[in-house]
Length: 348
Image 1: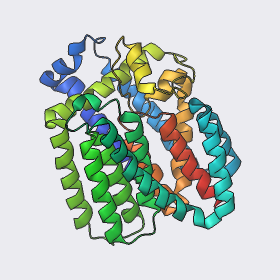
Image 2: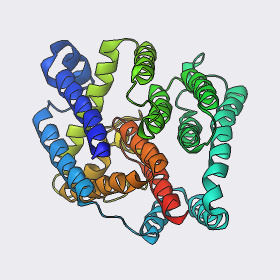
Image 3: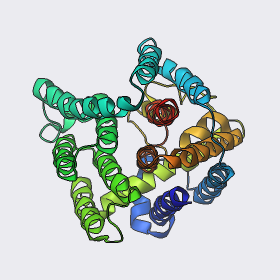
Image 4: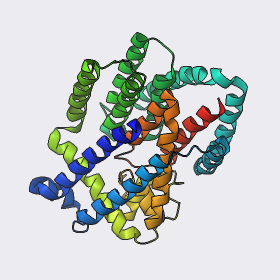
């Protein structure tokens, strides 16, 4: 039950902040709705969020453990969103796991950390640093997100000492502060602290994670421009979600195309007549693709979280990815990394 409790804490905290900024704070609400969106349907969005969370919890509580071929099949299907390279990478990973067995995660950790550190530096050198040139922020989003996912995986799966892991965390923090993406900074901190916490590294002494949480909170507020700016971001994401709910009733509007889209947030932005990328909340993709039938995807996501729990490292990584996805929403890359972690657990 630990996974559901931690996820629930993140989910309901986010939902509370969303409702507060969308409904109870008039000043924030005026800013959020200043772009001409459909008048607030917050109640409808909250109802759908709670229903989908209920199916997520049921999937978690059922406690099924699908076989490896199930994850391989899903991962192969999702990989076609990046055809032709996606399926090739999936096949290479499966072959590597079979060949390396228990050594695969050690190799994965080394290459993931190196890639997570070096790829952003290469892009910063070639194109410039988003922290100093804000116009580059969204031009580099693809490589920065992929690097953060790999960096998070490396932090979780490495067998290095705590001191070395902390050094890697500090280096990744600097890289993603320079990239100006606070959500990526949040992901690597989640991966680091959840891995330590779930393996009992703190042994009841929560001073280290508390200090880390305060430091991370200060960093995120600084990068956001203050509390109000952060609440506007959260509220706007939920505004997009409850408008997706309104437009998706009853059977969805994308029918799976959003999950397989190479640019899901751009696709959602285009739905509202803009070229800006819109985040859409944890269950936004399931609603937009499948409408009410999307509860089956929510059920599977809960099942994935529960199935990860028998391996502490897989558990830490999947849980970190799900909490990270609370704001941007599930997409093919997030789901691919989750399915990949679960498949590696099964095969190795």
